[in-house]
Image 1 (cartoon, rainbow, N blue to C red):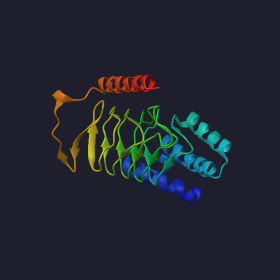
Image 2 (cartoon, helix red, strand yellow; image 1 turned 30 degrees about the vertical axis):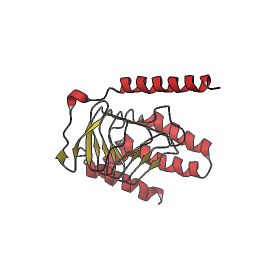
Image 3 (spheres, one colour; image 1 turned 60 degrees about the horizontal axis):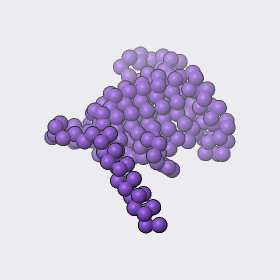
Image 4 (tube, rainbow, N blue to C red; image 1 turned 60 degrees about the vertical axis):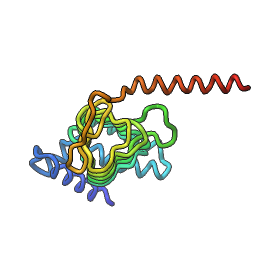
Length: 209
């Protein structure tokens, strides 16, 4: 797709989803999310062609001008709208499906524990609220919503709404999901247990040598 058609498509997507947008030219000149996406299209094309230095240069310039950081290797679908955008970070192996909406302060990042595919995949038409953190190589299903400031560490099914830290599904297919607040797993305790098991396993391996 040519750059002119790309710009038009991104501007129209922003106008359709932002009630504050009053004209095409307002979006074209003043919406950092649109500028960041257009810059990423150029950077991603160069990255795929092996011109990684130029790709990173474009990405760095876009970050300085918009406050939005998108790794040039990330895959961004069509009609993605980054609203406001300040503080958005999209990692190297992240995939964002068509029609997604991402608000300011969102991180599509990794946990530091994975190799290869380290960042999340958003299905089509996913909405990620302001300040949300989606961390790890899992999928947020099509048409799902991540609430503002949620921290998502596990896969979310399609047509779901998740909230909280860590995030849990509270609605699926427009129906509320029963949730036992008294028995919410503590991620810190779970991690300590996992590390203890790993230590015991290593002790046994050393003992058997």
